[in-house]
Length: 465
Image (cartoon, rainbow, N blue to C red; front, side, top):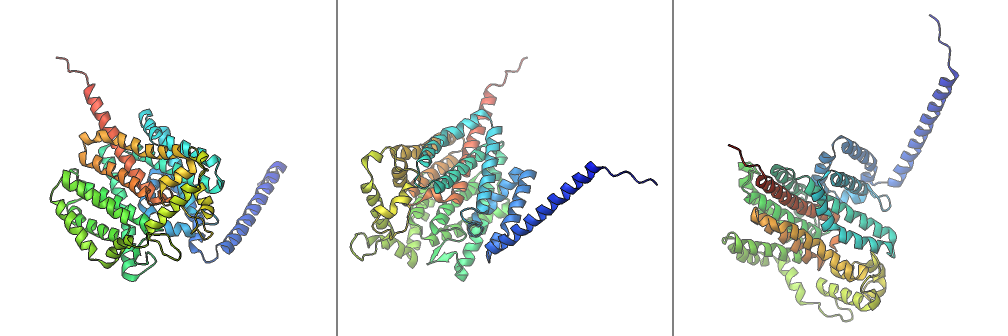
């Protein structure tokens, strides 16, 4: 056998490849060593890189399977994602980016009429917030929040795009309800064992704050209640019989959050349903507050509003009086010339150490979206925010002819969100915002589907005999 002559070009190429592989191995080893040193005892951070690789593989294989998994598990990931942060970024940023990219794919592939819905609802607010980012005192934090708002708009677009049939609508509605399994399971454990998710006798479960859990639960209760009442065979017979008990557990957890605005939102929904659909639920409206008031923690939370309402030396303000004080301090500090345009995105947080006497040198949010947007973006920012909800309600309202209960629940959810915006930092609650706006997107998508079905029926040709 004759030996082939060695080609110098092939030898050179092989040598280059070997050198590149060697450098890659050295870089990977150095990165792994440095990353482990930086991560320290943050075991979740050590898992961030392989988790990000797995997410990338899922994205390539099936984008919508990845979305389904994100929606099911995102409600239980706040604490884990916080522990994967290396500086300001972590695995949460990877999830946000992937959701945004999937949303952009949906925007590209959806029909022109669907794309117009997304633009009409979200574009005014995103434009105004983008202007605020340009003149923000802290550009990095402003861009970070702006990207989270864009990802929320992408989730809304996905809700519209994914409703191609009625079965699709119910499938994704069930996914929203299924996302509650982890927070409910951990929430019950944290109550029983006094784990981290039950701090100061207020339940927060897998979320970063009890208020976020409360707003999330009001949404899950509403969506779950609709699926339970829906004519479609959403659940099997056994699950349908047991589902009311699950709703009772959710209501109990809502009480345990001690979030008064969420209680008001839930109670309002129950009253309206009793008045317009089933009068027997008015009995629940009467008895539930009585039972709740017998619980010491609930009673103390309500009676807390009767004290601490005056700003005097060494006095402890209740939570609502504290909010009113910071709102008044901010608006009184504002220059009249800033009423139209504001101080830029995140301006309230940045200047709070200056205008708020009780800041103690720490930056704080307004706990009121309207006040914060007025300070940051001016009156036009507030109007753009209100337009976001008004436009959504306008797109859902025609659904009342086909799905009266669903349209009523969706519009009530929009009103409840506006209520929550009066006393909380709603723009920062990313995980809840994803579920909320995905639900609104699904309802808008169903209305679009039903309208398309009616239009196709009306233009069918007359049979020729």
